Length: 387
Image (cartoon, rainbow, N blue to C red; front, side, top):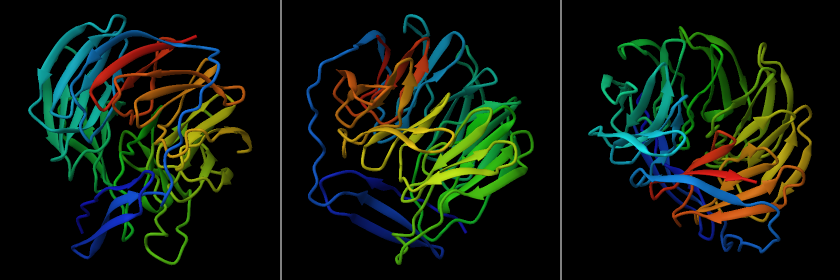
């Protein structure tokens, strides 16, 4: 059965709109989860205790409807536009080193590892470029690539829109292994990829399943259910993991849309704790705390050991807050109007704010050199510091 997943989005101010399709006995969902009659919160004024500063910025080209983000190597930043322009920038200055036209419509990227810059297309193509901009290989997976491919241990890990995970040889792009599983009747079209930690790949799936794979051969080390579907209708029973799991040396955590957040021991998969929190954006794990943005746009800090709430900021309600990034004394999140917010890691209060190019910020900020990178839907890439 081939699953052609369609988008199921959440936003604010409108009623739910759904289109159900039947393809080969499977149903897919397209629509928007909206809060009827509720508008995005207006930004409150506050006394700034910190400020963002732009270190450099570069024009990558419009992202369109695609969820695109930059990739980092020791010396370079790679960024891509929705129409396939792949750019290498100097990490320190943002100066363009080279720019090539890939010739594909990019729906997933940029990924990196093993000396490669990796992008994927809506036709299931995966392109791997050397650091000098020369194409090393071109391969194909089973369906559209909605997240950035990742590479480690000589293997490029690619997640396709039908839920399959392919391990490709980093040297030539030939498939080494394939992991696939059955999917529920309705699924959320998401940009969730894989999280690599040492020789492991952590992957969340529809139906709230979390799976840990060996990067080298694709074998399953353990799997568990983060969230169980609940409700009377198929729509209510959607409980998909739509963001990347987060891991450190001790534990792995994942969160489901219309479900819960749960953490496990990395080695054995033993459950540590769980809570009923829904998110379609994702989380970041740093030292003693887990930071996340929930479905309504609230940003919160949880105690890593117990899951208890440390603080919660509800002032970005329905503003489509991105997954957070924790940096120094602050937590950074973007929103649908292109604002980047800096929250205090101590209590979650607003500390800084900057408006970038005015287009929305979809992907979570990426840490770089005591600062962060933010790519907007308009295609501008910003290197910022906060102090």
